[in-house]
Length: 303
Ligand code: PMP
Image 1 (tube, rainbow, N blue to C red):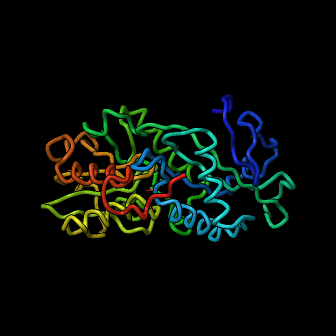
Image 2: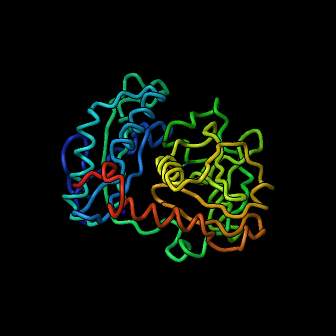
Image 3: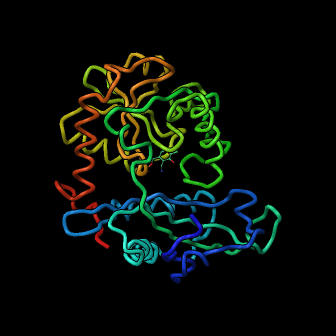
């Protein structure tokens, strides 16, 4: 990742990709206190457009508010930085990564004396869980790692350190030959994937866990709205893993994962064992929306 051409927005300026460096005593590198976003831009009707840019930037500011981390730029400046990162790297479609981290002014845990730095990088990134899995569906496994308790770390914040839990869960799932993990909350109910929100379908009704221990996903919000506009009932409820074993369909949502069908959990085939019809409909609608082929053009920001 570090050795390539291009530019990265770093504290207000575009710098050459290879020179976008920081000191080894960077505070966030040691303790994980930082916030970030994952945003995508697609090749859309009138050029390259960032999907739901304002909502992503708003979530970045909310994550920072939760961590009590002052971001030294306005939302508008960071929106422009994200558009510039796509544009100036000449990208037709992109994954965009804004991140706010503490500098190297001190190593103590108190952070009030530290400078907050902001970067925005953008690069091309295809289907996160594999292109063929977008039709075939993925195999997942219930994780032995519990999702964070709401009072251990702040689940509503997209915070760097929170991803240690995600990475351990994913590592375990991959070691068992699966594609992704399903994490349960501290009460034992389904929370989310390592980097995705979870949905299941039963008798035509779409269910998703509440946001107690899951990230308030922008793709989740998008899919709920699209499903609602298609006339489906979408309900938030507590979901047990055995409810998923007998679901008709299941899928993950996320900016990186988009709408990824789940074909198997813990060795049990879900529904027909491939992408279900409602999953397929919502996945196709999602791709139409992000590419500006249908309604909701207000969700697109052309770069
Ligand atoms: N949960 C977690 C833990 C995530 O990292 C992500 C990806 N940001 C999501 C859910 C999905 O969120 P979004 O749809 O906003 O990308």
